[in-house]
Length: 92
Image (cartoon, rainbow, N blue to C red; front, side, top):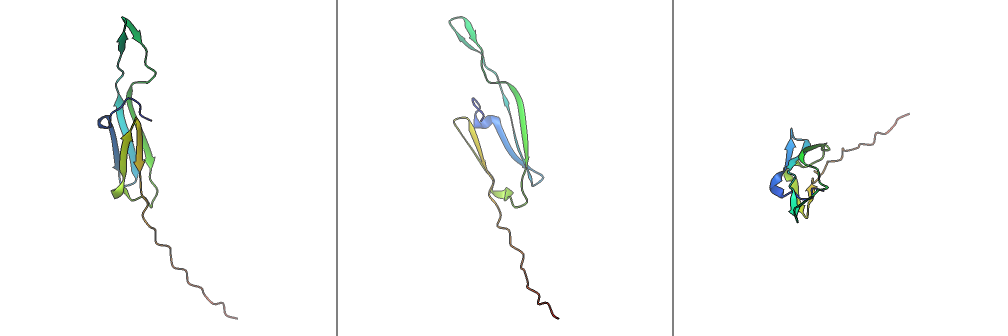
């Protein structure tokens, strides 16, 4: 959840091939009504979150979207080839 932020204020990056980084900055705005200040519940300042992606993450196809203050990041998986298993007969 990133209420009050625009998509231009949020940065989504993949570092070193396997680390997803989400960063941005909230700017606290004061609202004035009838010569009174109304406090805001949202904190201000910079934020940064990092997530290690799994080995089968397809980092070239990462997508991000933002709607109504909710950031959704989609990281598709690469089809991992299952190792071939050979059955060995036991003699004796």
